[in-house]
Image (cartoon, rainbow, N blue to C red; front, side, top):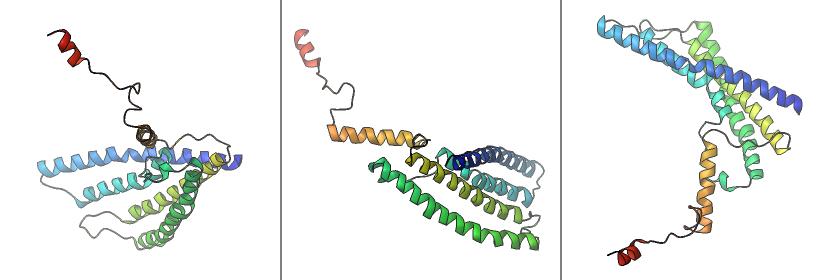
Length: 217
């Protein structure tokens, strides 16, 4: 299991670095958009290549940062029901989700993306827009993104099994989910103990206003 945890750490490191580097494409996309707008307004000229480059860069951020987002656990989750289950049940939900849902989804997308990319690359596919860019790099991003996401799914599965076996500590959901989980637990405790509990000292406040007005007219 320690060897698998080493593989998991390597995958985490790789996807973290790829995500951090790919995130800079947002800055490049902003610069390209700004320069393209200035040239179009000042010189009255533009090119479809600049417009397509912007969505190339956006696609790179979306696909190459997905695994990094998964590591930080900042992806969208629906835990309204799962939060009420014991930790053991939630661990099994994570395992089943990683294997059957995430694994199956990535497998299908990788399987269909390979010919999708190869056909475009072999034919030298180019955008149908005048002055457009070649298409295969964008299709390669789809394949690369789902390969990285699948690898991260394997890493998360290894860590989850290690947590269930007590080999590594449970660090919580991470990201904003820890705050949401603690807030849910607080609200449930208030609901259980009554509206007067869980706020301040739990003792009802007494109003001194009417008494003060009688003592000091």
